[in-house]
Picture (tube, rainbow, N blue to C red):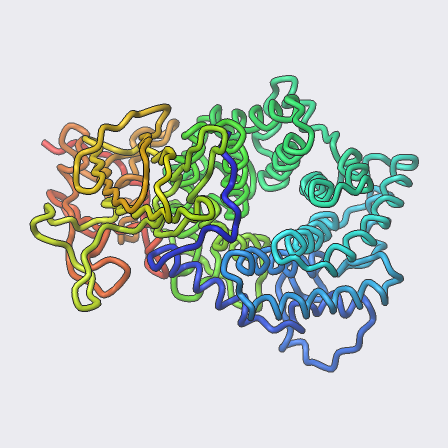
Length: 597
């Protein structure tokens, strides 16, 4: 089965995704450490003379019951970048912050590492309302776990060991007094973090904690074939599937894998999705065949996009099925990129999809929604999603077509990039190469220090329309297509592979409102630059009868504008651009289909 490439062996090259990742990294560095730590310092009784207007506000405000959650996200994101890029600047900042957390834990009595009071957990014991204290603590624990796993910070592991003692005592008391308390306070992520810590350390305390969080009601309902998701909080449920996946990793017990697969079936296979891949509204799962009813301003919460991509990554590693990679690709373009401001890096909590929508962006220091945290993590995982290895079959899998480098082993390196020619530092295309002007011409360069045989396995995207062209060293390759992958089994030394994936213009409709259509080019959802649903006149449901490509030179990632169209044969024509390129413009995704005579 596939496995993830070690983080330090893959990284991004210049291109669209690296642009977004670099904006995100700059934001991580921009935030002041004392503000990231503010709620931990306050809880530990450390005096601050700063004015409140200089502090992080919104969900990080000292008056918010979720205060402190964002630092955990920051630690997770920074740790991954440190591992990928040997980022010494981020490493120094992360180490300093974790040293401060260790001091806060000491001031709190040696075990408590919360940015919120311990008494919040007393409210769970008494079944009194409190806003998600286990969610808040989970982010801190997960950030520390990632700091130990990826950034090799030993202090983080020591903090976690002492925090585990607090949790062991609390969960033991709750098992006797109120077992329901363990499964309250938005606790879904706890199973994965404790299981992960056991996987990292083999410390039995962590396995004990994982076992105490391993019996939520959602697992029983999934096992019974029920739908426990419809109209329920989406992002509170997905972490349970992550936990089941991690338990399968550490135990090999097929019952855990069956739960993960059943969750996916309930969340994805048996449920409809918007053209973007989103399946929720106002943070709740939309019941099957009801998408049109929920088309509005609060569709597609970003936390769910990020967490479902993580789940798809788990499932691909467990099954090797290509449909999970197609799912990831759809959500990268129409979620990760579409819900990040391309200038500031700020998140959109929801992705509005009603006619005449405008994205609402968070601020750098005054909001800190949950989706703010998952956004800074999301733009660090691109390299992980591009490449996988199947060691048993001596197979390297190219999963996502994103400019990147992969070190397959000690002496084989593969690079992938858009197949452009470069003259005098300017990117262009050779007219003799069929005027290659779009992103789906891919060039791979395989460089081995000594000849080596292995299979290079290339995902064939589900959206490919037409003949797939693969050249090896300029010659058409004999390619075997196996379960959605093009397999190149050969001895590699210093070789070039050129790929051409023809992408068609297609339409997507809503199951309960088939008269509404959205347009896609390959995996990329297009948004009309218009303030209302003007309707689209089509001839025989052919999208090319209504849209024509727009091409012009640019000085951006690509030398030509990508995936831009203009309507034709309409009462009033307008442009459609990639949804991920929309920033402050008013836009419409779904249009009423009309017949063009």
